[in-house]
Image (tube, rainbow, N blue to C red; front, side, top):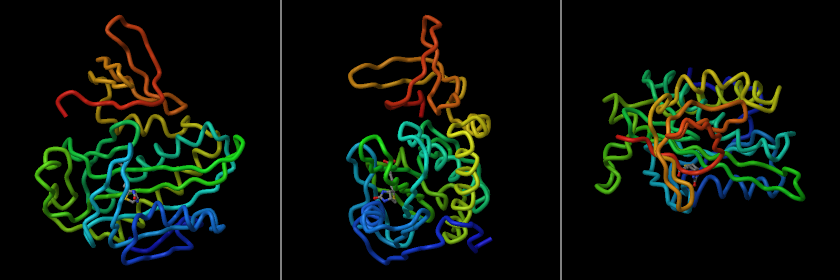
Length: 254
Ligand code: BTN
């Protein structure tokens, strides 16, 4: 379906030709009082933002570059799980709109054939431990034909993987539909108890050896999937289980 089937997500939408970053625009709208579910999309971002201060390549007209404002009535400490909800929604949206199976690299990258097709950047505003709003930014490499040399072994697009152009409106609508549905499930318990199994089923590294990088530390362990809080359970070489809630994970061989 190429029409929006959500109740509240994306019902107010700002469609832009060019913007610096849809996340920045969504934050500006949120500061000006934008409602829960307000969506910003752009054909082009002149300074798309990635995580850890990196930039995000946003080829004009060839991707889904979007951000939405959420004003959830949840505990601040549970808000980081919304990033995982977004990854799950993208995974399912890609399946619906492009017919291929992606894999999630915890916490929130979506890979196809081991390369990244989607990145998610969640930013929040809070005052005195009270959540004010969250901006969820999603970038999906839909129809990018070719990537710069430097990222070619790490990044891909749906077009490059399927050989077919994907309908970006359809993709956007499907992702929003899944996000809204999964968000409602998440809200019931404010955790991943209803989504964990599905999320783990899509994990790129379930049961595999991964390298976890945290600050200066690096260690190899086995990934056992996420728990109800969205943390990654890993087993180290001594058989000890740890639950990690942040840090970079790199999958061996990927
Ligand atoms: C990452 O993997 O580093 C996250 C990338 C997030 C990119 C998207 S594109 C739409 C939204 N606007 C931005 O400036 N960034 C996010």
